[in-house]
Image (cartoon, each protein chain N blue to C red):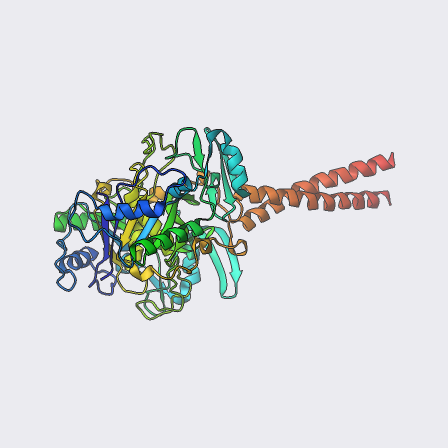
Length: 279
Length: 279
């Protein structure tokens, strides 16, 4: 039967730079909740832990003063994708150094200590791997780890959680080459299960509850070797990206290029006509 | 404790035009699986059913001949957002009549009978509501219903399931005005829980398994009145949409406009300079 459960781990304390997340997570999975007589709270083979990237940032000390927020966004930015002014300021959608397109480059001011903002982990896939290795070693269970972040998206209101780091878990359920229930080949179907896991666990982790880690049990088919491709493989390469630039920004770029070539042509034509009149 | 379970209902037969989905879904929830002694398989207050929109399309007879696929896409299209040629043909990303931006307007050729393609339901929110009303009436349980579809997205490879119809369930978990665990206001945070539910259940429904309906138990806090806003409220209005047009398309539009105004200016300047030379 296809079934899974997801729950938020309780008892993870506020994380500080240098904290050992392997220990904190393992302790939270072992403690259970209210002595509930559920299937063992210890980690099992096939469990997947979805960890809010924010606590990884905190453990890694990726904290900067809020006063330096704009400079931090700029430092994390590879290129501007789109920007928009609104009553509260300017929203900058940028591609950050990880290739992730995100508002404010993923620099985050919620659930942080007063006067500080958080940068994303330096290398979320490496952080996920360190967690997966540590948890596998400590508990003996073959678990997968996903690091999640909250992103907006084009065309649709609101945000969903997605995977920005992954280790020991398939990020895609690659169905290309398989057939549907009617026997027809599934040509382009490649569900991003890592993003779906991140989205699923946001439903229990929430943003206001102080539970930054969720455990998913029942999807062991998605757990694999530690050297599987990480979440970096979810980032679409530029040559396949049809929305590399915001519509207004792309149009403005076009207007400039078009004006220049039109001006040159018009200028030449102006002379040509003037010459014809002179003749 | 924050916990939910999601499972795919088994025993839903191939759906044909005119089939009563309320009966089919209710029967599937009541039958259980292999006599498993799990918590009751009957629907309970707070259960959420996520139904692949494809079977709603089938029940509604939204089937057209595959030969008419291109015409069907055109008929479902309100405007072209972006298109790209590739070895297999042309991918058209369009806004369809529901405001949803999707490849091929959501016209679907997988899990359909040979020689046919499926259009999206006429009004997915209305279809979700009819299902929710029917299931609430038949079972007495206060359930929510989401209709899901599989969509690609900019910047990230692969697809995730999202909500295109909803009834009796909150589509957003509106946290604006609430505070984070550190006591700071969550200014713009509005998780799209309907999309997250659709994504979560894709992990158990799959695409190759013939299980088009999943049940989510444990998130009753998201279930509400039947007149809650539907999935149409997820569609971002044009004035808030920074990616209304593909980058290439927006740039081309700009080049044309820029060329025209540059040409005019250049033409005028050409004359002006010619006049100056004449003087």
